[in-house]
Image 1 (cartoon, helix red, strand yellow):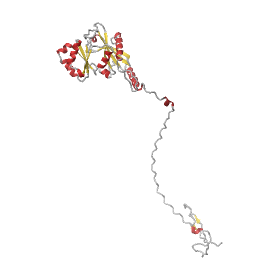
Image 2 (cartoon, one colour):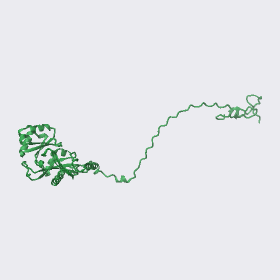
Image 3 (cartoon, rainbow, N blue to C red):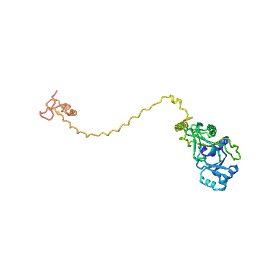
Length: 336
């Protein structure tokens, strides 16, 4: 991303790769001044120049001046430097007059593959002061085949200079949306090191734009939102999964145990309420048969819980029993 936002980085990479670009001077924040920049412009032989900002878009910070007016009024550059003090670098280029006469062709690429192109003349350089667009609609000017073919070729070469990018699995991920803006020069170039000829079309890379750019959705003759939506969805999947280790084949062969559903938690039982114990019944008194000579027996009273045991005193007959007078407390046993 910063490779694009810092215009000097991709511009220098493209220049090293032999991709045609307009004469350019880089004014870096750490070593720039109005006087130094004007001196470099004059040394290159330029008559007109334009200024651009890195980390900018929509022509913000774009300015056009002649060398003559900048020399007469030093405040022109001084005020520009003060107003844009916070920007890390200025891009200064010789003004290419061909922008007024020719289309700037903007090619859209995904994974470095061409998608579509639009041609336009920006409002800041068009003679009418309004933007003119050719994107393929019948109500627009026809798209120039020569411009689109040249732009596709230069754009493809420019994308080859991009740094490689990889996901967390180490797999290379292709570039997302890039827009290559290709200009055409057919006027006089004053730079002492350039040999572009007036009257001949020279196509060159003007700028590279990253994903957050103008997609010209309302100008193209088709609905491009589903196109980009599908691209970004697939790219997200690619970033997350490409090169990921395959699942363990042995683990896949083993049966999968399905956990039993957890039993519902029983509600706690209410504490038992102890009932008041009933009063114990008084055991019935044993009745003794007092008939003389009869063996004492315990008679069970109906309703009693348990039969009363025979009293020990009544269970055994004394070895020597003396006859007692009838009516005494204990009856004497009949002698054997």
